[in-house]
Length: 209
Picture 1 (cartoon, rainbow, N blue to C red):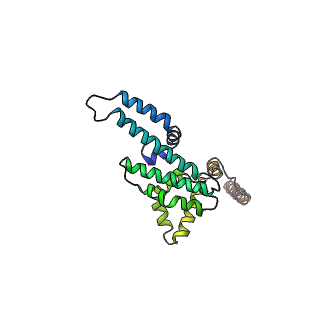
Picture 2 (cartoon, rainbow, N blue to C red):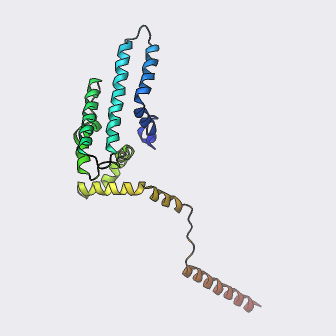
Picture 3 (cartoon, rainbow, N blue to C red):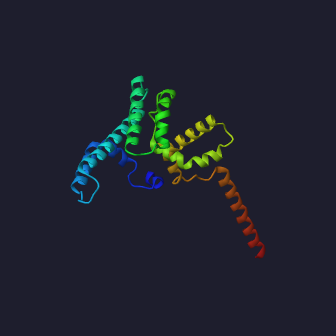
């Protein structure tokens, strides 16, 4: 599903694997790029090393942020560490020539506040869920346009969570193979109609004879 609305292949589980193994993967990429250097290239072994090391560090920092988000009932030290991870990741992004994205701004300014504000933390946070919300947000906005922002957000969250629960999905899937039998009243009515029709046919036959 992620690939469909992201438009790419490096999504979902692949990103998690990439982040969790950033050091090993970027080391192999650095070695490959260094060995593939052409004489007319503007890059040098040192510049390739710097870029690869920065990407590695960036992945590790964001992996730390996402990991901390899944801590149940985080403590003060977790809040502080998460903010440090975010600040360092955003600063490194600037040094690498990247512009600040909306997500980067949201993470730096709001995510730790939300960890503090939500009871138990954001341990149920799922990036896939958040991305999917972006895709269906317009439909939700139109559907709940007469509600205040708080009520709208709560309704959207509850509906999305309810529809994505494994139990709900399993129950919905079972409906495709479930066939409801006819009710007793319907069966009795059908039998009565059949009897009446049979009697009429017999009577009509007798009259003809």
